[in-house]
Amino acid sequence: MKQVQQNDRVSISCTGKLEDGTTFHDSNESEPLVITIGSHELPPTLEQALLGMSPGEQKRVKIEPDEGYGPRRKDLLQTLDRSTLGSTMTPQIGMVLSLKVEKDGQDHQVPATIVEINNDTIVVDYNHPLAGHNLFYDISVISIEKEPQ
Image (cartoon, rainbow, N blue to C red; front, top):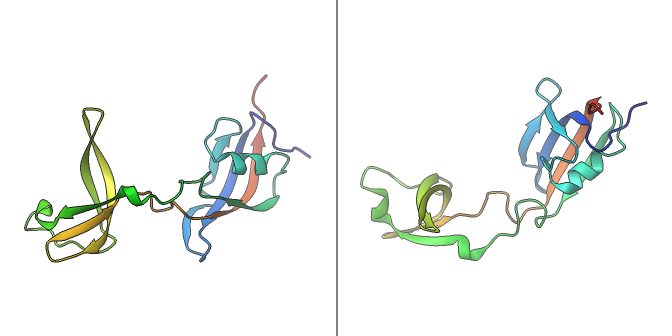
């Protein structure tokens, strides 16, 4: 039976969950995730877990924050004047804003989540929503396509 090897193109179903069971990613057999092993499309632990698997085989893999989206960083929280949102926007906790940030002399639009609302200020979080979390992936190999020699 075929087994996943380095450089193989592999179709997988993959469900990503947090420790509390919240699903953050779901690709099933009808819409599989297609990746090439060794191309760094997935975290290394996930690619490593796929090596040696055969079609139909399933595994659960845990990804630590350092290999996933990193630890939560307090320096990525920022307090802004509420007036920066303008008078027409009503901020809500969990709302994701697209904010302009200057880095290396260039402006970039980046997502930031509102985590606190006060009378005159809001606190936004620039951390990725999955930062600081252990991630659990249930993976299943659907098919393996050998890379041409």
